[in-house]
Length: 201
Image 1 (cartoon, rainbow, N blue to C red):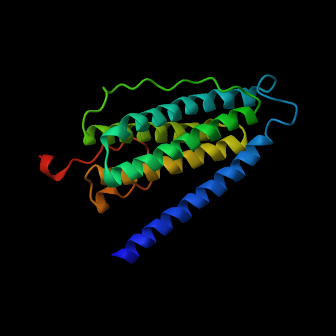
Image 2 (tube, rainbow, N blue to C red; image 1 turned 135 degrees about the vertical axis):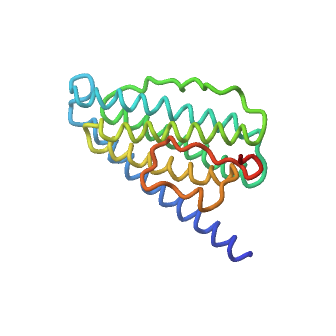
């Protein structure tokens, strides 16, 4: 059991390392996007990218806020996972902000207001996180074909992949078995959360 746990921790660290390396490379690429002398103020394609990126930023800020609201109600494994996902969501916010600046625009977004009331139970907290991740996944997928420049398009695709991974683990925390938590071939952000065994009709 100890070796399995060590393997899981090692795998998580390797995965986090890959994310950091990928985001670092992406940020360097984004930093160069606005240096050609044509930014969003004079380039209509970059201006369009800034609008899409600001919509994505708004959704990413809402995801960070959902995790902030969920954390106090969680313990143990759920707390560890959600805490890590909150940090990753903040990394998404930072990357999108840099992408906006990279194409010569300004970050001008506020978190999307949550529709659900404040969570009161562990399940409420996990559902809030699950819904936020699904909404962010759908937003990122919609953003990819709308992007005109390469680096922002790459970023949107990376965001979609990250959110799809988060959704899969959140399904397990919500009581879904391993098989029912496996992602669809093409996740779209509209798969409902699993129903715990005791609540199944």
